[in-house]
Image (cartoon, rainbow, N blue to C red; front, side, top):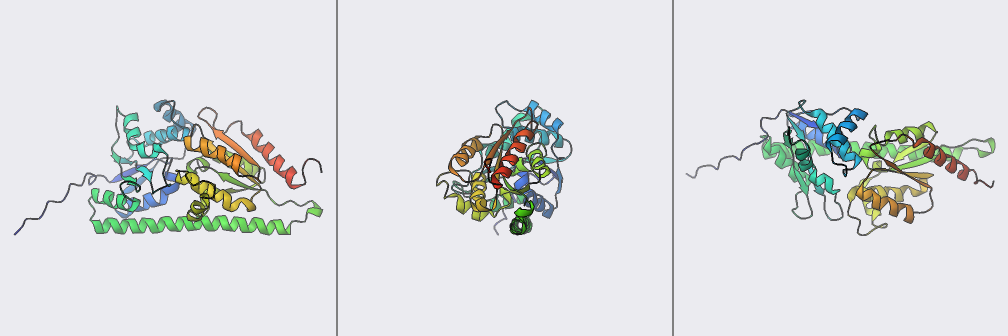
Length: 338
């Protein structure tokens, strides 16, 4: 009788609590990640929402050349030290051709290890790389689940549950966006301009989710727009598949999937909005190329391009935002020569 092959070791079998930094791709994959770990019986701890002290700590830990979002991530990772058994830091290369992520996402596990080389945290990771090695996110997570001691069947089941939860979250975001658009269209039809009534301005915020939704980066801009009476729409909430397909009308070669989705959403929503606000975290390489191309090539709507840095954050941007809203208001009313 042939003896059974020994089971491969489970390097994560002793881990009971996983920490996830509330930064970078957390804002895209929060539901998927947390649902998966919980489905395999792992408790998830997330860092607190971004605050100034967290950014200052991340800035002190990072090289000057790192972008603001990466520095903030290190601050979040630092805040989880001692609060969990290991920190989840995936390596995200791409989801296929023309679906790449910024190189910092692929290198993130190494960046974290090198940043905390004196007191290195235990890291749970997986590699998602579909273009060269055909390792899909599903394959990577199932393999990672087995490293926690799960059977392949249980890891697959956990992935299915997480994927379902993530899809439901996306559908809810898309429905909420559609509802906002319907309400804007309804209010514009009912507005009686002869009585001086004004429909709210529709502003599309085009920014990476970890910029648009983070309290230290995009939230101040969004709050300022809403305080001035604008209805804010997020490009990230548009149907990703439709946006990705539409993006090829803008560029056949753009490599970054998130930038593609944002540009595609802008093209799809172009007729429903009054203006566009581009927000970037300094110094973002992909954004420095794509935002400039968007401003030059997509015409017909006023655009405001804002860059958030480690020193000032969103402070000092209020005047530019107020001026932008004034311009849109004047334009809608017939311009300065009315």
